[in-house]
Length: 239
Ligand SMILES: [Zn+2]
Ligand SMILES: [Zn+2]
Image (cartoon, rainbow, N blue to C red):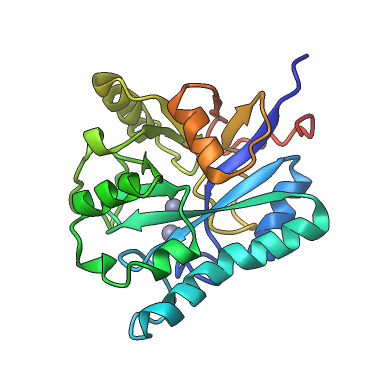
């Protein structure tokens, strides 16, 4: 059997995301126990459901924002889990997972929140980052409308394992197909106490960075994990 590496590509920590209940260290422990090789921490950004005080000066806000990733990375180094940095940028209706940029990049653009979502996504690409649209057709009480920027995305999250209803994921796959965009997967886990989502991707190659993952996703070199809603598929046979 081919050796595969399993990754969570979309997850949150309670240090940074107001809707998350478990700390970065608790989340890292959960994925390690489930046999994942690595995780990418994608907390809600300034325009999303962050719990970092928006009245802070930009550099202090960025420090707070990066703490979820940094805590997960510290725990990952202790337990043998690869931890990479990502961002879930968006207004809660239209959300974009950003990979390949870092704290220094955030610090160097203190005015980035004045940009429109499309202008921000263009800046990400200009600076070498990549964009994956998260759950483009999620339906929820907090979503009143969504915007789509297919020409500014490198791939689409066609399987968000937190969705109990199959329709939003089915629509996401159709949307990706319309635009010839590759599909990828993530769980969007916010705690260790909900049912086990078990989503993400498998890769025949071990990633060295979040950008490495995004490039593989855009090239169609990953397998999207599609656990049945509510299933526990932690099988411990992955690296
Ligand atoms: Zn959230
Ligand atoms: Zn999310």
